[in-house]
Length: 107
Image 1 (cartoon, rainbow, N blue to C red):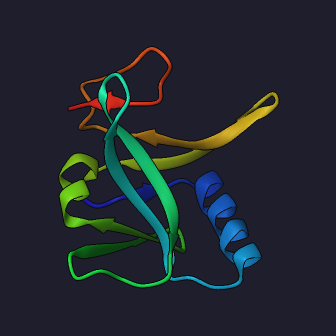
Image 2: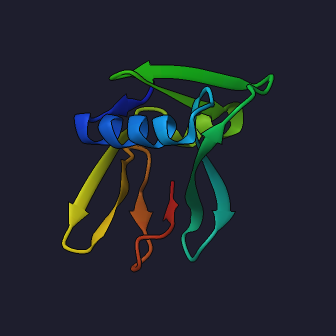
Protein backbone atom coordinates (compact mmCIF):
# COMPACT_ATOMS: atom_id res chain seq x y z
CA UNK A 1 0.00 0.00 0.00
CA UNK A 2 2.68 2.51 0.91
CA UNK A 3 2.39 5.99 2.35
CA UNK A 4 0.37 8.90 0.98
CA UNK A 5 1.38 12.55 1.43
CA UNK A 6 -1.25 15.27 1.03
CA UNK A 7 -0.48 18.54 -0.76
CA UNK A 8 -0.41 20.41 2.57
CA UNK A 9 1.98 17.89 4.15
CA UNK A 10 4.21 17.87 1.05
CA UNK A 11 4.45 21.66 1.06
CA UNK A 12 5.39 21.76 4.74
CA UNK A 13 7.84 18.84 4.49
CA UNK A 14 9.59 20.44 1.50
CA UNK A 15 9.89 23.72 3.40
CA UNK A 16 11.47 21.89 6.35
CA UNK A 17 13.88 20.03 4.07
CA UNK A 18 14.81 23.19 2.16
CA UNK A 19 15.38 25.06 5.43
CA UNK A 20 17.59 22.28 6.70
CA UNK A 21 19.58 22.22 3.47
CA UNK A 22 20.39 18.50 3.47
CA UNK A 23 18.88 15.07 4.04
CA UNK A 24 17.33 12.20 2.16
CA UNK A 25 13.79 12.65 3.41
CA UNK A 26 11.65 12.19 6.51
CA UNK A 27 11.55 9.10 8.70
CA UNK A 28 8.11 8.03 9.81
CA UNK A 29 8.16 5.45 12.55
CA UNK A 30 6.56 4.32 15.78
CA UNK A 31 7.84 3.99 19.31
CA UNK A 32 6.35 2.30 22.34
CA UNK A 33 4.95 4.98 24.63
CA UNK A 34 1.80 6.72 25.80
CA UNK A 35 -1.39 5.40 27.26
CA UNK A 36 -2.44 3.52 24.11
CA UNK A 37 0.90 1.87 23.39
CA UNK A 38 2.41 3.42 20.23
CA UNK A 39 3.30 6.96 19.20
CA UNK A 40 4.37 8.39 15.85
CA UNK A 41 7.93 9.56 15.25
CA UNK A 42 8.78 11.99 12.44
CA UNK A 43 12.42 13.05 11.93
CA UNK A 44 14.98 13.92 9.27
CA UNK A 45 16.97 11.13 7.60
CA UNK A 46 20.59 11.54 6.54
CA UNK A 47 21.45 7.85 6.02
CA UNK A 48 19.38 4.80 5.17
CA UNK A 49 19.43 1.72 7.40
CA UNK A 50 19.49 -1.80 6.00
CA UNK A 51 15.82 -2.47 6.83
CA UNK A 52 14.44 0.88 5.58
CA UNK A 53 11.74 1.11 2.95
CA UNK A 54 11.59 4.32 0.90
CA UNK A 55 8.27 5.67 -0.37
CA UNK A 56 7.90 8.79 -2.49
CA UNK A 57 4.63 10.62 -2.89
CA UNK A 58 3.92 14.19 -3.90
CA UNK A 59 7.65 14.89 -4.21
CA UNK A 60 8.47 13.85 -0.62
CA UNK A 61 10.53 10.80 0.37
CA UNK A 62 9.21 9.00 3.43
CA UNK A 63 11.51 6.39 4.99
CA UNK A 64 10.10 3.70 7.27
CA UNK A 65 11.96 0.94 9.08
CA UNK A 66 10.73 -2.62 8.61
CA UNK A 67 9.28 -2.95 12.13
CA UNK A 68 7.29 0.27 11.90
CA UNK A 69 5.96 -0.50 8.42
CA UNK A 70 3.58 -3.17 9.72
CA UNK A 71 1.84 -0.47 11.81
CA UNK A 72 2.02 2.33 9.22
CA UNK A 73 1.34 0.74 5.82
CA UNK A 74 -1.42 2.73 4.12
CA UNK A 75 -1.04 5.80 6.34
CA UNK A 76 -1.75 9.25 4.93
CA UNK A 77 0.48 12.07 6.19
CA UNK A 78 -1.35 15.38 6.35
CA UNK A 79 -0.59 18.85 7.74
CA UNK A 80 -3.21 21.04 9.34
CA UNK A 81 -3.31 24.47 10.92
CA UNK A 82 -6.12 25.22 13.35
CA UNK A 83 -5.89 28.58 15.09
CA UNK A 84 -2.52 28.78 16.82
CA UNK A 85 -1.96 25.02 16.53
CA UNK A 86 -0.35 23.42 13.52
CA UNK A 87 1.25 20.08 12.87
CA UNK A 88 1.43 16.87 10.94
CA UNK A 89 -1.50 14.49 11.25
CA UNK A 90 -1.48 10.76 10.65
CA UNK A 91 -4.52 9.12 9.06
CA UNK A 92 -3.65 5.50 9.82
CA UNK A 93 -6.05 2.76 8.66
CA UNK A 94 -4.31 0.27 10.98
CA UNK A 95 -5.07 2.17 14.20
CA UNK A 96 -7.90 0.67 16.23
CA UNK A 97 -8.01 3.48 18.74
CA UNK A 98 -6.26 6.51 20.18
CA UNK A 99 -5.79 7.81 23.68
CA UNK A 100 -7.87 10.80 24.75
CA UNK A 101 -5.06 13.30 24.22
CA UNK A 102 -4.32 11.95 20.71
CA UNK A 103 -0.63 11.37 21.42
CA UNK A 104 -0.66 7.59 21.07
CA UNK A 105 -2.59 4.83 19.30
CA UNK A 106 -3.08 1.07 19.32
CA UNK A 107 -3.54 -1.55 16.64
